[in-house]
Image (cartoon, rainbow, N blue to C red):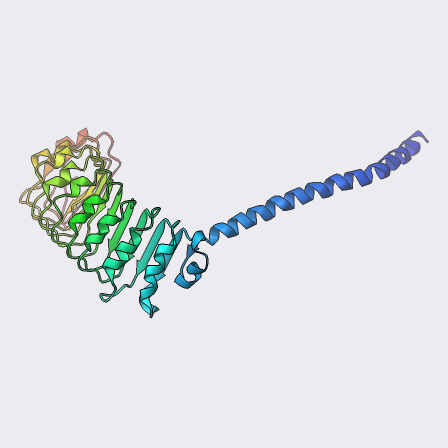
Length: 312
């Protein structure tokens, strides 16, 4: 009897408190939904900062932070001067610009964008880098790849905050002597070009960490290359190197890729670089490892592709 009375009593209390519980629950759900809708709004807004169509971007220039355009099917390239309206843009990525494109005006226009820190040009026809490149003083990341480039403007020296420079897959045979003016440069990618010599000024880029020189025509490296104290990775494959400079083993490299050169003898001095973690060796005259390999206490990986017998 007592149990039945207690059950009725609890049911009554629950019914009396139910409106209060429902009210709290509704308010809680409203709060949750409000947060969800706010997040969706922020997400959608963030998505609208990157554009793939110039006309769409021009409709809301203050929102544009990034712009990627392929000009393969674009008829009116003169509208490119409208880029000056994107005064908050950080990144511009263009491809398929042809030789008739007015590159000097293009770079001059970009120099008026105070927040632009990334510029990528790919599969364009830009044989000579215009001097107006020197006006893009806020650039930190510059990539001009697959553009048939044969000459780099000396004005590139003015890009003092540049940390990443990719000029790969072009037809560059020489580098300007004033590269050492870009003190902040950390990554230099020059693979698949026609370089036959490197300027000594390259060795004064004290912040340089990674250099890719794969598939060029290099016959030698600067004698003072060992001065690059921060260099961690270098790729030298598919060149015409006959020897490595004496200072090479002074580098504190972690990655070294070497092979298919013109070495008369394998440069065993590289095994004196005790900091090495990864080594790639291919198509090179080498039939065994020297005893000095035991010094490489940090070594993690050796990749070999020698096309001949090797004495392990």
